[in-house]
Image 1 (cartoon, rainbow, N blue to C red):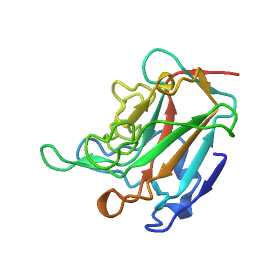
Image 2 (cartoon, one colour; image 1 turned 135 degrees about the vertical axis):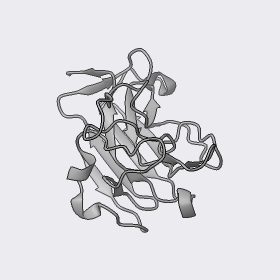
Image 3 (cartoon, rainbow, N blue to C red; image 1 turned 60 degrees about the horizontal axis):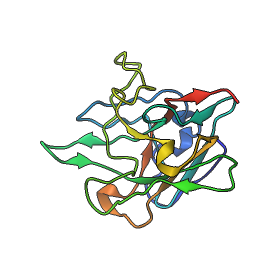
Image 4 (cartoon, rainbow, N blue to C red; image 1 turned 30 degrees about the vertical axis):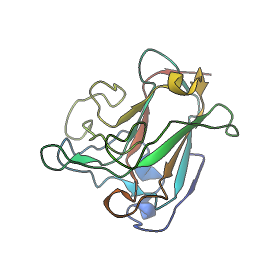
Length: 177
Protein backbone atom coordinates (compact mmCIF):
# COMPACT_ATOMS: atom_id res chain seq x y z
CA UNK A 1 0.00 0.00 0.00
CA UNK A 2 1.40 3.38 -0.99
CA UNK A 3 -1.23 5.86 0.20
CA UNK A 4 -4.81 6.25 1.32
CA UNK A 5 -7.37 8.89 2.19
CA UNK A 6 -10.65 7.74 3.67
CA UNK A 7 -13.78 9.64 2.70
CA UNK A 8 -16.84 10.32 4.84
CA UNK A 9 -19.44 7.69 5.55
CA UNK A 10 -19.15 4.26 7.03
CA UNK A 11 -15.76 3.70 8.79
CA UNK A 12 -16.07 -0.11 8.89
CA UNK A 13 -12.67 -1.85 9.18
CA UNK A 14 -10.64 1.36 9.13
CA UNK A 15 -9.22 0.55 12.58
CA UNK A 16 -7.71 -2.64 11.05
CA UNK A 17 -6.23 -0.92 8.00
CA UNK A 18 -3.91 -1.52 6.21
CA UNK A 19 -3.58 -5.15 7.34
CA UNK A 20 -7.19 -5.98 6.51
CA UNK A 21 -6.57 -5.15 2.82
CA UNK A 22 -3.47 -7.35 2.51
CA UNK A 23 -3.47 -11.05 1.74
CA UNK A 24 -6.04 -13.08 -0.14
CA UNK A 25 -9.72 -12.13 -0.35
CA UNK A 26 -12.15 -13.54 2.19
CA UNK A 27 -15.16 -13.83 -0.08
CA UNK A 28 -18.61 -14.65 1.18
CA UNK A 29 -19.63 -16.47 -2.00
CA UNK A 30 -22.42 -15.67 -4.40
CA UNK A 31 -25.01 -14.69 -1.87
CA UNK A 32 -23.24 -13.20 1.13
CA UNK A 33 -20.79 -10.34 1.58
CA UNK A 34 -17.60 -10.62 3.59
CA UNK A 35 -16.94 -8.59 6.72
CA UNK A 36 -13.16 -8.86 6.24
CA UNK A 37 -13.13 -5.50 4.44
CA UNK A 38 -12.33 -1.82 4.89
CA UNK A 39 -14.84 0.82 3.84
CA UNK A 40 -12.87 3.52 2.06
CA UNK A 41 -15.64 6.12 2.39
CA UNK A 42 -17.39 8.29 -0.15
CA UNK A 43 -14.69 9.67 -2.43
CA UNK A 44 -11.97 7.87 -0.47
CA UNK A 45 -8.98 6.38 -2.23
CA UNK A 46 -6.41 3.63 -1.67
CA UNK A 47 -3.30 3.23 -3.81
CA UNK A 48 -1.38 -0.05 -3.90
CA UNK A 49 2.20 -0.39 -5.08
CA UNK A 50 3.49 -3.88 -5.74
CA UNK A 51 6.93 -4.15 -4.19
CA UNK A 52 8.99 -6.66 -6.11
CA UNK A 53 6.25 -7.29 -8.68
CA UNK A 54 4.64 -5.66 -11.66
CA UNK A 55 1.19 -6.26 -13.06
CA UNK A 56 1.91 -7.14 -16.69
CA UNK A 57 -0.36 -7.34 -19.69
CA UNK A 58 -0.68 -11.05 -20.34
CA UNK A 59 -3.41 -13.24 -21.73
CA UNK A 60 -6.80 -12.19 -20.35
CA UNK A 61 -7.33 -10.13 -17.20
CA UNK A 62 -4.17 -9.03 -15.38
CA UNK A 63 -5.42 -8.19 -11.87
CA UNK A 64 -8.54 -8.54 -9.74
CA UNK A 65 -10.09 -6.11 -7.25
CA UNK A 66 -12.25 -7.71 -4.57
CA UNK A 67 -15.10 -5.94 -2.79
CA UNK A 68 -17.90 -7.63 -0.82
CA UNK A 69 -20.58 -7.61 -3.52
CA UNK A 70 -23.16 -10.38 -3.40
CA UNK A 71 -26.24 -11.52 -5.25
CA UNK A 72 -29.46 -10.38 -3.61
CA UNK A 73 -32.37 -12.16 -5.25
CA UNK A 74 -32.44 -13.89 -8.60
CA UNK A 75 -30.93 -11.09 -10.68
CA UNK A 76 -30.00 -8.23 -8.36
CA UNK A 77 -26.44 -7.69 -7.13
CA UNK A 78 -25.73 -5.63 -4.03
CA UNK A 79 -22.91 -3.58 -5.49
CA UNK A 80 -20.77 -0.78 -4.03
CA UNK A 81 -18.73 0.76 -6.78
CA UNK A 82 -15.29 2.27 -7.29
CA UNK A 83 -13.23 3.54 -10.19
CA UNK A 84 -9.95 1.73 -10.89
CA UNK A 85 -6.85 3.45 -12.24
CA UNK A 86 -3.38 2.09 -13.01
CA UNK A 87 0.00 3.72 -13.37
CA UNK A 88 3.52 2.75 -14.31
CA UNK A 89 5.17 5.59 -12.37
CA UNK A 90 2.62 6.78 -9.77
CA UNK A 91 2.26 10.12 -11.60
CA UNK A 92 0.44 9.42 -14.87
CA UNK A 93 -2.77 7.42 -14.39
CA UNK A 94 -5.11 5.59 -16.75
CA UNK A 95 -8.68 4.93 -15.62
CA UNK A 96 -10.86 2.01 -16.61
CA UNK A 97 -14.24 3.40 -17.76
CA UNK A 98 -16.75 3.08 -14.92
CA UNK A 99 -20.38 3.56 -15.98
CA UNK A 100 -21.69 3.51 -12.45
CA UNK A 101 -25.22 4.76 -12.94
CA UNK A 102 -26.86 1.41 -13.67
CA UNK A 103 -26.15 -2.27 -14.12
CA UNK A 104 -24.15 -3.61 -15.75
CA UNK A 105 -21.53 -1.27 -14.37
CA UNK A 106 -18.87 -1.64 -17.06
CA UNK A 107 -15.34 -1.48 -15.76
CA UNK A 108 -16.25 -0.47 -12.22
CA UNK A 109 -15.05 -2.53 -9.30
CA UNK A 110 -17.45 -3.77 -6.68
CA UNK A 111 -20.18 -5.61 -8.53
CA UNK A 112 -19.07 -9.24 -8.88
CA UNK A 113 -19.37 -11.52 -5.85
CA UNK A 114 -16.10 -12.74 -4.33
CA UNK A 115 -15.81 -16.52 -4.39
CA UNK A 116 -12.17 -17.09 -3.31
CA UNK A 117 -11.64 -17.50 0.43
CA UNK A 118 -8.72 -19.62 1.68
CA UNK A 119 -10.48 -20.13 5.04
CA UNK A 120 -13.43 -21.82 3.33
CA UNK A 121 -12.37 -23.14 -0.08
CA UNK A 122 -9.44 -23.82 -2.40
CA UNK A 123 -10.42 -21.34 -5.13
CA UNK A 124 -7.31 -19.62 -6.50
CA UNK A 125 -7.64 -15.86 -5.83
CA UNK A 126 -5.28 -15.09 -8.73
CA UNK A 127 -7.41 -16.92 -11.31
CA UNK A 128 -9.96 -14.50 -12.79
CA UNK A 129 -12.00 -17.37 -14.25
CA UNK A 130 -12.97 -18.71 -10.80
CA UNK A 131 -12.04 -16.19 -8.07
CA UNK A 132 -14.91 -13.78 -8.48
CA UNK A 133 -14.30 -10.08 -7.92
CA UNK A 134 -13.77 -7.63 -10.75
CA UNK A 135 -10.99 -8.43 -13.21
CA UNK A 136 -9.12 -5.83 -15.25
CA UNK A 137 -6.99 -6.13 -18.38
CA UNK A 138 -4.17 -3.61 -18.89
CA UNK A 139 -4.71 -3.86 -22.66
CA UNK A 140 -8.01 -2.01 -22.13
CA UNK A 141 -6.05 1.10 -21.09
CA UNK A 142 -3.11 0.54 -23.46
CA UNK A 143 -0.46 -0.33 -20.86
CA UNK A 144 2.13 -3.12 -20.99
CA UNK A 145 2.62 -3.07 -17.22
CA UNK A 146 1.52 -1.25 -14.07
CA UNK A 147 3.32 -0.80 -10.79
CA UNK A 148 0.38 0.92 -9.04
CA UNK A 149 -3.37 0.35 -8.72
CA UNK A 150 -5.60 3.10 -7.32
CA UNK A 151 -9.14 2.43 -6.10
CA UNK A 152 -11.43 5.45 -5.68
CA UNK A 153 -14.90 5.28 -4.19
CA UNK A 154 -17.46 6.99 -6.41
CA UNK A 155 -18.43 10.41 -4.98
CA UNK A 156 -21.47 10.54 -7.25
CA UNK A 157 -23.13 7.54 -5.60
CA UNK A 158 -25.05 7.40 -2.34
CA UNK A 159 -27.16 4.84 -0.55
CA UNK A 160 -26.64 1.12 -1.21
CA UNK A 161 -24.02 1.70 -3.90
CA UNK A 162 -22.29 4.54 -2.07
CA UNK A 163 -19.42 3.12 0.00
CA UNK A 164 -16.87 0.73 -1.54
CA UNK A 165 -15.68 -2.00 0.86
CA UNK A 166 -12.19 -3.16 -0.15
CA UNK A 167 -11.33 -6.80 0.49
CA UNK A 168 -8.11 -7.35 -1.52
CA UNK A 169 -6.26 -6.93 -4.80
CA UNK A 170 -4.66 -9.89 -6.60
CA UNK A 171 -2.25 -9.97 -9.51
CA UNK A 172 -3.17 -12.54 -12.17
CA UNK A 173 -0.25 -11.74 -14.50
CA UNK A 174 2.87 -10.77 -12.57
CA UNK A 175 6.53 -10.20 -13.35
CA UNK A 176 9.46 -9.32 -11.12
CA UNK A 177 10.95 -5.99 -12.28
